[in-house]
Image 1 (cartoon, helix red, strand yellow):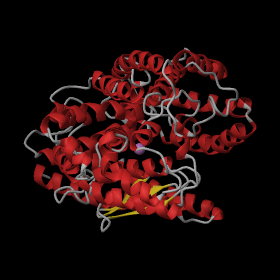
Image 2 (cartoon, rainbow, N blue to C red):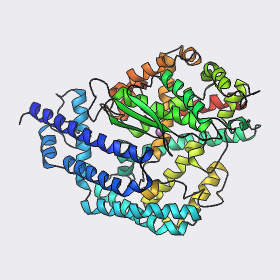
Image 3 (cartoon, rainbow, N blue to C red):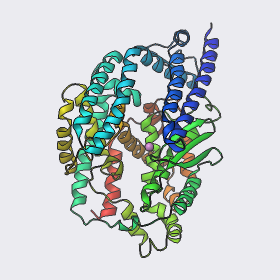
Length: 507
Ligand code: CO
């Protein structure tokens, strides 16, 4: 076959695989939002059937032959340079997937599936009874299999490299360590300064806030952000998430909690940021292809956090929205000035639980996990030593020590699911978002007026042009370079935090 016939065939296969992925996403969506409790067994059979089909198709000899015919190799993963950028992006993605899946023996993949399916209930039981020893043998097995995975995938510098690469393609352990070390120092210094100041009041956030009214308000903001309700829906689930189940079907969830309003509002905006990226990535050119989605977890998280933290927790944002919020909740916000409100939603306080952490301390929770994971994977740390190592790091970075393993080492589901290498993407998202924001400020000098007048659509248009519509064509590093003109620089995030919290806390 000639090159043109090869790329045409790859696109046909891609279209079919995207449909299978959509089916998987729909099954997952239903499981989280609608499915009765006892549906779980049938659902996992359905999911594993579709995933098996996907795996077989991606690792088929036809894909291998096509990639070879397209000139893809380790030196040239995007194939022959005569192809267009979207075609090269597609070749790169398939080359990557194909090689990864080929390197992992089926026996190992199956063993991981069995071990993690037993580890998850054990983790839940351990967390409930605050007894690490229930989970420890399972985690030992998971770490052992993870080490084996790194050997199969291969690496040059650090066994953690192929793990992080799985979730954030192109990222290395050394690069993550470099940028994390940079921000860690700055955040710890900022926290010390904040701790010397009077704490802000946020008690008004923890009153009875009607869910229906919260929902109305969240939808209004989503609409202003450019969320297209003809191509997406907002629903509810225990853990907020975003998923694409079709080319014009992007779904998000939030969680309404009464009392308390801010967690659901900011979850809605956070997932709204993910959805805008997905909606923009499904551009006419990329729609229905595997490139019609966000490029990486970190870039995705940079978009959700941009909208949640940089935009919606800013003073400017509430110039426009505070009066409307007060009108919806007159009793709860009576006597609370806008200034008090903005300080309240930006309260900084070292706490045990990552998912409840504020914008300043959040990244420290991630850096802690990154340091522990790398040590576990390269054998410097043993699973039985983990709780103690966790508590020591909490003490060093945040100045607090968990009283129980439930609020320490057992708090996250990730390790029980075998997700080692995933955590860094959350904090990398913060770093990306601040760096993108720096460029946005230069290119849209009137951005503050737009935010303070509710004209959020101007920000969405800029992001769409610079990031969203590129979908998966370019790598995360390339997108960052194209938009900001330089590689990842953690100083933007440190400066952003410093400036913002100097204002909030009067440092
Ligand atoms: Co997110």
